[in-house]
Amino acid sequence: MASQHRRVRSRGMAVGAAALAVSAALAAGPATGTVPADDSRPAVPAPDGPVATPTVLAVPAAPVTPKAPAVPDVGFPSVSVPAPPVPLRDIPAFGAFLASDARGVARMEQLSRWLGGAELRVGHTYLPGNHWSDIEGDIGFLESWARWRNAEDDRMLVLNVPLQERNEEGVPDHEVRQLLRRGAAGEFDHHFRALAERLVALKVPDTVLVLGWEMNGVTYTHRCGPDPESWKKYWNRIVRTMRAVPGQEFRFDFTPSRGRDAVPWTRCYPGDDTVDIIGMDSYDQPAGHSFDEQVEEPYGLQAHVDFAKAHGKPISYPEWGLFRNGDNPEYMRRMLAWIDEHKPLYNTLTDYCPHGVWQCDDNPESSRVYRSVLSGRIHEEEPDTTPQTPAPAPAPTTPEPPLPPENCSPLDLGQWVEYWLGGRLCLRFDWWSRTR
Image 1 (cartoon, rainbow, N blue to C red):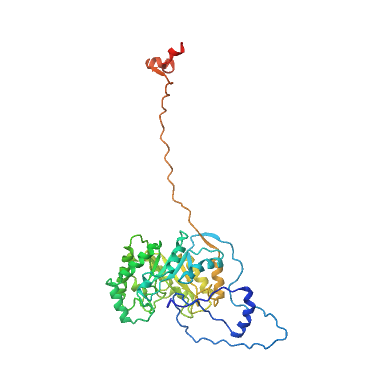
Image 2 (cartoon, one colour; image 1 turned 120 degrees about the vertical axis):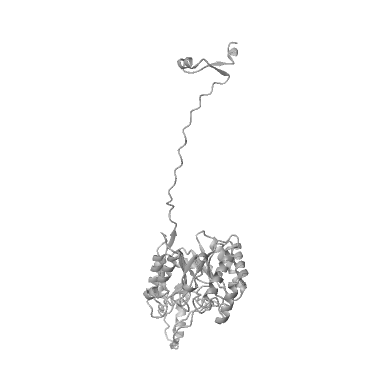
């Protein structure tokens, strides 16, 4: 939702190592999430309050009879075996953001197993916004995602695309304004044409492109607030440029963050001709706000659904998850119910701390809710109920008259004689040979 360079702690823990880890855990206090070094994903704002320092527990010196301590509850989700997959019709396509690079691809299968074989039909990744070459798709991990997408016909690849380089470098408003105007004039078209050609060459021409996400905020250089009119013109140029590339089938997702933020997101809407999906990034915040307040607030969840309906567009939730209210199973339960009710085209949970439930150990109760609701979900296609036109009955045919025997010539004696004889007489050509 903000910077893309937070890291994720690996979830794997060997059961055999648990007892050895307990002594270190007692000595060092609560563990905090660590992450691999080169992950790309939206960053998390700094916490509102001070971070508590864990108390170090004293370790008893030289016990006479060492005992294996009881393994404490470390807050992992239930390890009970989920119910076997059950095909369900009309369930929203879902997935999770697990990492931008090839590790995210590998984790899709692992998350599916954790969810009892649930079918993750949506893969979600981000292009970095450091340089224009990033935005052109000159990134090796796109090949891994393309292979994942093309392994099954009903999968969907969602790709967040920055609209500017130096996208997270705190570029001031006056410079953003100039960049937006240059983009609206067509100066950056060639970068997006290169991206479109790259995706078509990778055989993922139907990728969902989340352009300039959370444009109503203050985090990104591709924000809308400094010049909404130029931002809209720039969006329209990008879409038309990419749609002009032969072979493309892209869908463009306009995705603000929930609420008013720095500017009402409706002021940034570029128009129905260049928007295919109206999305919303929605995290559990501000602190103390209930889910009902998130639904009812200005430019909130209900306003998003109503706006999309008025414009005849499907909705999506490219980013959602826990945040300012900590481990909040009520939020998790209500958000999953909201998704089931309103059936977005797709949704992807942001699965790293503090938002996630699988790669983040800080939210065990929400994790149990997420797992219990989604375990075993397998999409089943609706049966084809189109009335079938029956094949026309074959036209009746007039029977052909019987052919005369070989070496025989029929005699024409008139209809009256043939009526009484019951047919024509036939004179055989080989009568002479029969008399010899």
